[in-house]
Image: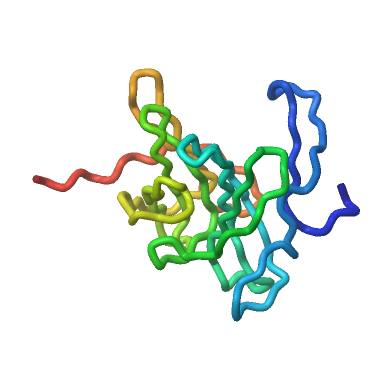
Length: 185
């Protein structure tokens, strides 16, 4: 809806084929307030997971200033997927600048993970806390850098990450990055 200010809009459909229905704005840029940092903020690439432990929907998104130098992640929550989300916090998970990002919840144990481009230098994967509101530390670092990361678990149990090269808005083929070498011991 062009009449709404910048933010995250929510749509629903019975399946991917649609029809899609506009549910309203889930989070507006004016909803984001960070002490000591003037807005308005840019909100990009939102991802939402349902947390069965807290019965809440948790949204992570790239949060930046107009010059793209803030390089934080934002976190917001809601009790329903199509309701308004409440901004919780701004952070640089593990103290690292976060750009393009994704989330993954393992269906085997409901453990959630935050996947992001760290300052366009490498891909970092961090385990999230039980409430999905913070990082518990980086568990994997992968170079070269990619964006548009999507992790999924195959029916055989293997985890895969599909991503693309850093080419801005220019299309490029998807890649399955090779795993980092295993450390002995």
